[in-house]
Amino acid sequence: MANDYVLTCCSTCDLGDERLAERGIRKAYFHVIIGNDDFYDNIGVSITQEQMYKRILSGEEGHSSQVSTAQYLELFEPILAEGKDILHLTLASGISGTINSAQVAKATLAEKYPDRKMYIVDSASATGGFGVLMEILADMRDEGKSIDELYEWVEANKLRQNLWFFVSDLTFLIRGGRVSKTSGTLGNLLNICPVMRLNPDSVIEVMEKVRGKKKVARRIVDIMAERAENGTDYDGYCIINHSSPEEAEITRAMIEETFPKLKGKVIVRLLGGTIGLHTGPGAVVLSYMGKERDPSTTS
Image (tube, rainbow, N blue to C red; front, side, top):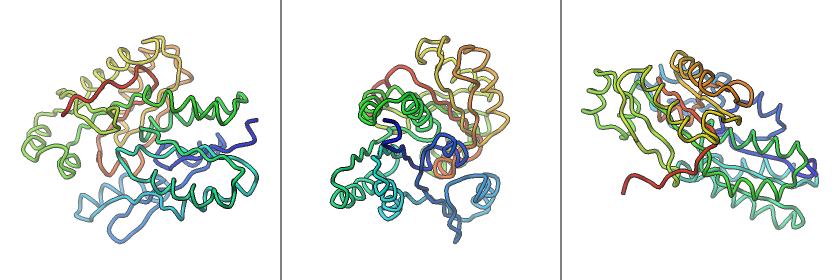
């Protein structure tokens, strides 16, 4: 029965507190640290994107902190005490080690609640891709499927979650070492936008370089037409997370014109702080279900 278990996740699914509450999904927060200030990773509530980027660009250090074992214990134990089981998805292990903290919490609580099921799943994704999986799992729960059915589905299908993105301002990619200073500076001058993805190991790869914001938006929409389940007849969830409203809107309009059968409209949300600290401003992340991720193109 659906009410015998609870779906939980990390805040890095970037669905936002309100949407997660609507879907009956409980979460544990990553933290965003700017200078000496520690914020929950709920952009737009604790701190805005504009404030975060302004402070970092002015010289303050910014980094994120993963969910600790203590936080997972605080999330999980009340659910188990209610007599319910747990299916928890974490941020991709290729990005964060938070799954290890979740596993420690599970092992600790298993002694106290030996009759309860606790599934800890590496989402193999982040931000909207992670969010797409949570939306689908919530739908399956609401259809009356069991926790075992959800666990089997997500383990079998999580690599069909496609996450592609572009960044039009390369400043943060230069700082993070993903783009060399010389290439990044030249790229900014020439308006070159890298097209990136999460590979099967949940590692970010640069796949192409496109010149111009509209052209790069068109390119990731064309990639979606190639990779989405049933091509342009795709009728599942599509989520855009961004740190650039203008470019997100351009991409959204192209998607809704190209994919008329989407499950509702494109869900457009801000990019969370944890991922946004790495991409910086000018990022548009596109997530949907489709072909299983191709093997890495890098050695």
